[in-house]
Image 1 (cartoon, rainbow, N blue to C red):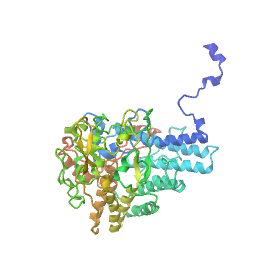
Image 2: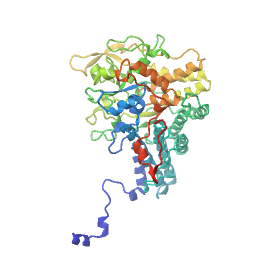
Image 3: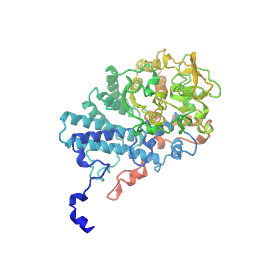
Image 4: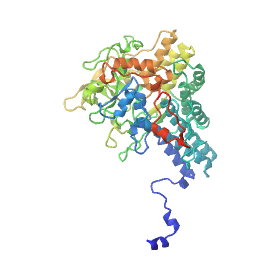
Length: 568
């Protein structure tokens, strides 16, 4: 050994680790581009060692779905018990899902800061490309911090002004309050530099940055008690109108086209989380929603994220085709026998119902459900790829069905919210009717089918008939009551974006979580016995607790820099 050490130079002992990116290799134009791709890779919520992908999934089916009146944890009582605690509003700082959400979000922040600091110093970049890289990174940094602000009442903001990749102590910053101003600054900076068009669809445009800037303002549009903060809504309005007046976007003719692999990046899309899948790998596929598929073949796993009876009932309409704004939950949409009363057709593109064709796979039946007595008969379906996108990797739960995180329909309904609070009720009605007109496109009605003789997958269409008594109409009478207009816009928002992970956070920003969710629990407990006695406690449950791990790891000079939400 002495001979070997004597005969080897010092360079021989200094080996660059295999499978890692060295700091030196990133100090090039190619290197910083690879760092930027690494930051994008964190957007979908995967990429954290030792973390289940659904803990930090960007669609927030756990934190924004099963904690709301839209969805239930589903599957059976013993699977993923940490989700059961979340569903029952038993939030605690040791919950692994909450911990991993924090880890994932701030790993994304770290990657964006690495991009920004590297791009500023690397040689060989054109100044134009340097600015573009930094703008894209600031857009992504805004996305990650937006996720943090929705989750935690007082998160931390980590900017490139403090970030130092060589100093693990640099990011130990205090959480002094809400961070909306810094989130807005990131989106504003990105919007001022990003182009109106991008050659690659996954990269954000200036309009995408403006849309998220408007969204940040909309999330500040009401206080925790539900009172409108008109100044923030007025700031959002010109951004929303600019996007609408640009003529770049329109509603897809069919609502269902927002949830198919074949129709990704369509005319309604402002920014999508891009997924990819091949026969060789599903690493870039929709891993985070893999559990939330029916329990039966061809998926086989795992029955999570079922729809609530409350949500299904919300799609009932009267004989004129309008929703029951005040009494939607007074009657159940049943499944044991065919339900013949009027329904909004968006229901059967949102929820899998027994007896109805499920995304052209087969007729949904109660054995799609793992435990019918536990979480009921309804499945979630928007994120499920159509048959043509199934099974590419061998497991169809992994697909390339993009998550439409920002689409034109959101812009229309956010502007409708603004117009209501500013007293422009007729403009709000016009915007809502645009959404409802699209919902009424008969070409998008789910067809009626009958079961074949030879296999579950075999069915035949019933000529000229649709699966249910679909009826949806526009609001044709003038809106003169501000309270009714506000209720109608918020109701439409639920119908349009149900099961997409937004509902808990919509109720949060409107300041109505306690009112809505406790009414939901009073009703849903009649169907789901495990919800009996559960209450939503405001202000505590309006946000999640900061993970104990994050506080423990923030210790600097003997004291933690992060303090827990005072409600926990």
